[in-house]
Image (cartoon, rainbow, N blue to C red; front, side, top):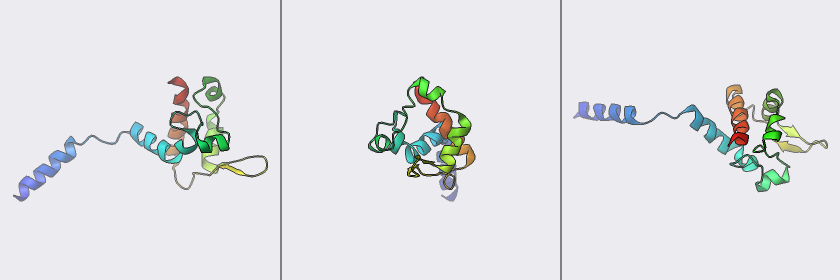
Amino acid sequence: MKQILILTAVAVTLATPAFSADEAVLASYKKHCAACHGADGKGQTTMGKKVSCKDYSDAKVTAEVKDDEALKAVKEGLKDKAGKELMKPFSAKLSDDEIKALVAHLKTFAKK
């Protein structure tokens, strides 16, 4: 009986598809970014409009995004000229690789 349970557990584990990198990035985007930037990157959410998010589905807007500036913005957050926080920093919640993947994902909205 014990062997059957072990074999069943192994079979279920092998049959379960792994969580892909793309799915992980999408889940992270939904968790950390979509409330403002929207599921489509347009920034037309209530919060996105409030903080004037850019429309990353626009290829021209996306082409102007410099990776190093975007990485810094996600890591350190963004403030307006008066010092009001527009985007909180994510360096404590996300690794550098996760941030790079989110920036790359944001750039895909213009290609859809």
